[in-house]
Image 1 (cartoon, rainbow, N blue to C red):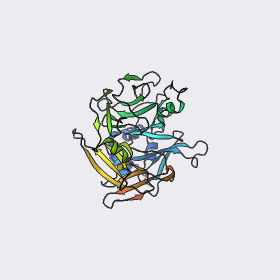
Image 2: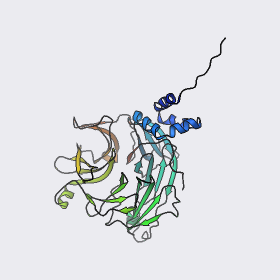
Image 3: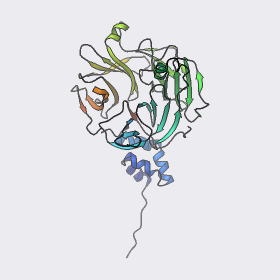
Image 4: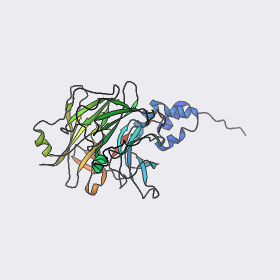
Length: 369
């Protein structure tokens, strides 16, 4: 009887098979051999895998039904809302995804309670920044704790370094930390923002090496921080609407900024006439032109929408919808029919802020807590 000879698979065949393999399994397969680990860690593999499976949705919150002992988890979901991985004890009540950047997630528990940076591919917490010391706590405890500081997370273009930006409102200070440095001693103080920055309107947004902050004087003006040079840009960016600022504010229910498929967007919820959420994107031509990309009708039970991504194929928009009693659901908006449909497989209990993660399968920096 002749013996059967095993024929090794070519690297191209292994590459193609792994590209079709779910995210959770690929993370485990890095341990098979050094060759597999190097293949999976390559940027071209991450791009090929993402083109087949899409990015991941990241949800943090308090989920006692899934983990009764702690209930503090971070969930990774596919675009259909299926939970494909749970990272234990990095979420919790009040935790929000303050930012997601490429393959890393920044988490914060409110504006005055520090920040954590998590690698969703491994579940490792790469950075833990405790809150700043609040010297005004004894005088104004609630104001100090609720509105004292704000954190941003972004990546410099030239150096490819990840950085955390921290602004203390009362002190008017701005500090920067490079991911991988010791958070207890490596904060660098830079010039403060030219005008006050609110800490109650959501997290700043980093796009193409610039971190954008909503300004206090008018919520439709943006301050721009260059992550590479760690300097504030001289010119601020005005919002898309024109007219009397007081009149515009009277007609506005909420304003926030976000990143949408690589572009900065401003989300403005109108509360008069026909209630709608208008999503404006900033043209990247350098001429500071705002383009109204979507105008989404709001039901009487919807308080606001947050855009997450333009779906593959273009046109349809994945939304985070805030409804009654602070409930959060995922919807897909179709501008051709001007209607929204629920993402049926999404968990019923979602956190306050959902993020998009375009993951890689290798870690750029080591943990340094």
